[in-house]
Length: 213
Image 1 (cartoon, rainbow, N blue to C red):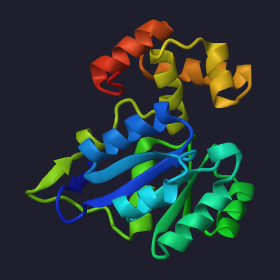
Image 2 (image 1 turned 135 degrees about the vertical axis):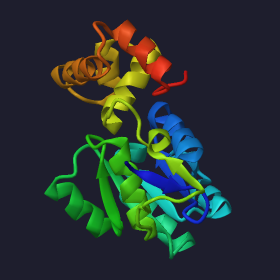
Image 3 (image 1 turned 180 degrees about the vertical axis):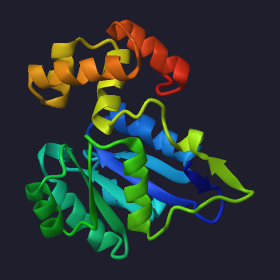
Image 4 (image 1 turned 90 degrees about the vertical axis):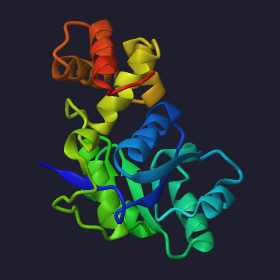
């Protein structure tokens, strides 16, 4: 069972991107459940670097699709303001091409949206230089930092768009992915939640605390 400390392992993270429906709830979850004080900053915010400077995060996660593909520019600007910051690139899939892009851009790590939220937390902690502790009297138990079911970040994104009332085609347009891919994500969400329809999946996710909206 995974256990996370609530005191000595606390640190700050900033999530930068264009998709608040994914990143804002993720920031809230990280803050409340994983002892990682997290904020969301829109990649279109002209004061992005200044906001990060004021928040003083230990780790910054930058969505590769941020601001029409200017993730490398965001990373460079962050480095100039916060030279000691650890930067993780959030990508659709962590293949060799995206890893090469991350290295070239000056990132310290890569995490894919096709990976679980637990993996996302592990990557943040690794970038911060923290090992996952084995427990203690002041620890948070794993059920607070291990969402059930084990949805990937992309599946959580699809689920939140479903909860917002978007149709499958609209979700595909919002996420800029093919219709067949969108349908596959929706179907996996339904199956993982043990539901029989999109509406039931959303209801079960709310009941389980996977989504709160």
